[in-house]
Amino acid sequence: MTRGVLSRDEIRRRVDALGPWFHNLDLDGVPTAPTHFLGDYPNVKWRRFSGVIPDRLEGKTVLDIGCNAGFYAMEMKRRGAERVLGLDTDEEYLAQARFAAEVSGLRIEFRKMSAYDVGQLREKFDLVIFMGVLYHLRHPLLALDLIHEHVAGDLLLFQSMLRGDAQVDPLDENYDFWTTEHFDSPGYPKLHFIEHKYADDPTNWWVPNRACVEAMLRSSGFAITAHPEDEVYLCKRSERPQADGPVYPFRRPG
Ligand SMILES: C[S@@+](CC[C@H](N)C(=O)[O-])C[C@H]1O[C@@H](n2cnc3c(N)ncnc32)[C@H](O)[C@@H]1O
Image 1 (cartoon, rainbow, N blue to C red):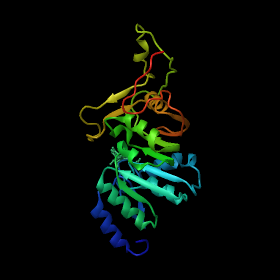
Image 2: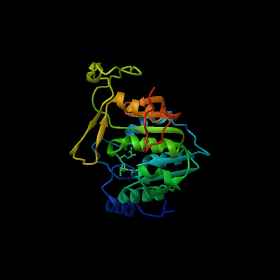
Image 3: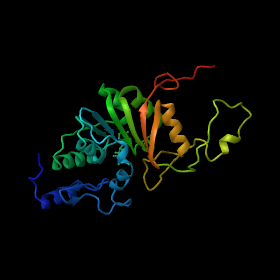
Image 4: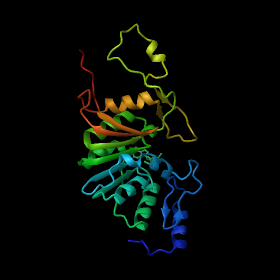
């Protein structure tokens, strides 16, 4: 372990070499992203919803999908989680996460793996964290379905960027072919497709409104149990309303 072994100057040198950082972490007094456009991120966000996660996670397993530099993975380890596995597709973020965990003296495994490949893990986790990834995916429902089928054991901590109206319309089970006005209501589930870029980021693909993200979670078999922050949901794994698997599902008539 590197904790207490590296001087502050050496940590600063490594932080600079591993940058740019998306997570502003405090590594022995060295901030990794002090000029983040969202402020002290994700600390400012975490403070608004940390209360919905159990204070102590002894004996629990945690999977952090899209872990970036490991902020949430490290918070879960600090709460005593027995095993924490962080996944990301980006080697540079994974290198940051490994360094940050080492400097912080936290034993966490980080692996290069996509949200689409979680079936390869062959393991269920007590808590799955899926924060800030959905809108970066071309196939967001596929990822949610795969998480439900393969790795979600109990709780899902979820966040998505949201755009559009915050109203959530109650939905009927069915509408006849000639009924169309509900599609135009601001509170109807809508997923905005980004063909080119949003916020200069070509990996932003689909941004839901609130009604849509809640409907997507339910449709993938995640019952919303808490909504502690605008974009954040705590869910409990439940049965999927449609029982078909994620890849070739169909809706049976009737
Ligand atoms: C906006 S950041 C969110 C980071 C962190 N989860 C948080 O909430 O602060 C999105 C992260 O998802 C990762 N990512 C993008 N596509 C992914 C995929 N298919 N599977 C796993 N991670 C992915 C990116 O590399 C990036 O680290």
